[in-house]
Length: 113
Length: 114
Image 1: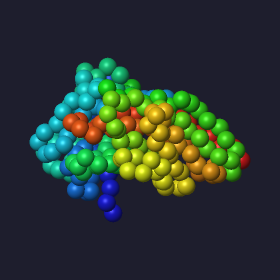
Image 2: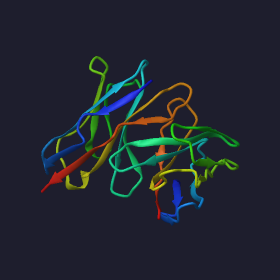
Image 3: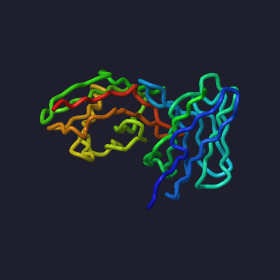
Image 4: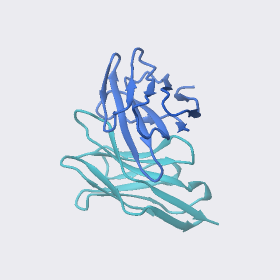
């Protein structure tokens, strides 16, 4: 089955700890994205990557870091510098063409205690 | 800059009645527009997309949307609501040059009453 997987589904961490969220896709998509969703709000872009070994900051990148060493993987690290990390995190991917559509993973709910 | 306004944060309909979820966009160029649906604690599923072809776009599960440039609107409709349609719906605009990330509306929660 082709798709996007995110793990874990639920994640709990203590304040001050870094945590890494996994995102893997087997759709052979070039571009991958990380979004954050807070209650009652739409999604906001954290980071995106259009090709391997390259990524750009989105609208709310502070306190987050990413890597793109492989085409199929785009892990997101939530660092201790992120002031309010509790949220629902969604990963997406797309082909690189002009009419590419973004497809989303099932999400990871991060709760910082 | 581009933006999306979903005019209703919450819509409630009875099963079997029509659904209308309203969306207005602002863009200085011809955008691509999308509707996504999100069920509780799930990822987003694409319902339909407009990419400058036909202005009336048909999507999955009986949904459709009409792009009206003069009104800068992209409202989502369905003739007859089903209980399984209860979810959060997001209208989304995408710039088709440079960074192709999406700009999301704040969402409309659709409630379907039996």
